[in-house]
Image 1 (cartoon, rainbow, N blue to C red):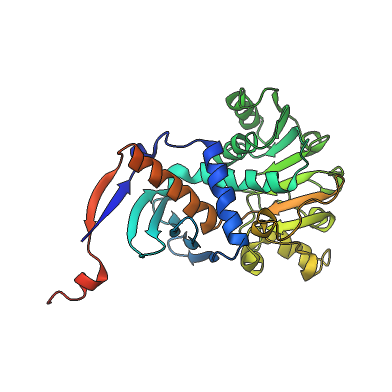
Image 2: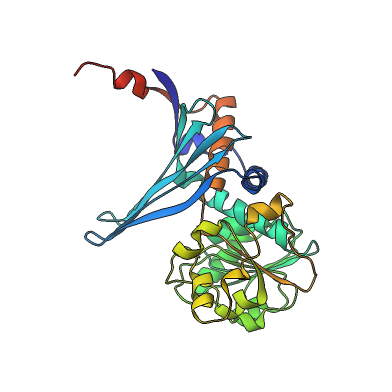
Length: 333
């Protein structure tokens, strides 16, 4: 028997904030840049009932853990459940099972912020946010830990949503969070553009991006859906989270490729290579840069380890006994 910690929503509450997640995720991507294994998502679709079952995984050898995500979305309940198992990378022992939904906006926001930190100008101070949900909020909170944001403009097609988001985010930065009437108003003068929507088509015209802008796209994980248009990808130094997902679900990249806007070699480097210093990031203040994030086990495993360690320090969670295969398989039947 081995002791495994079950960390539910209550056990994880308040254990770590955006800055801690950003640090953990940055270190995880550095390890990826040094060769740590990671695989893109495997998405299994169900037509009847309609739903999605997804898994992805990573090993962080220097941190000493491995893990990832599995989650269901849709199906008969029309909801989603996220599970994050965490294993010891040396012994292979199962350490913990975490409620993955509780950490999702934090770990997803953190990888977006790592992309901003690696690619945006050091003096970036104005952000545009497309989307007003939990993921958009997580992106803004995390980005505010890596850049001194003085103003944020938010756009959503629904007035009440953008106004509600602006009210909710007041105080996240020192300056104003302002709802705007359209995409062009959001982008004008922005140093950082964040897209965190469920849109199936581009949310802004890439020709409007000003020199020196960085774009972080978080809704790019379907081959037929893309928040960024071909012009944006064509104009940008393009950095994905994992090269292996480009042909699977990087919708914006695939669209730009299909329309002839780019060639396959348009990909600059994975984010991990930039973080590890194996590939340069921004080399010119006028460059437009894009970080295309579809979600990986890298940030999930990093976030799970952070929460697991803090939960142990705080004596939170429930310990349950699990039987390893060596014992279970040897029992008489």
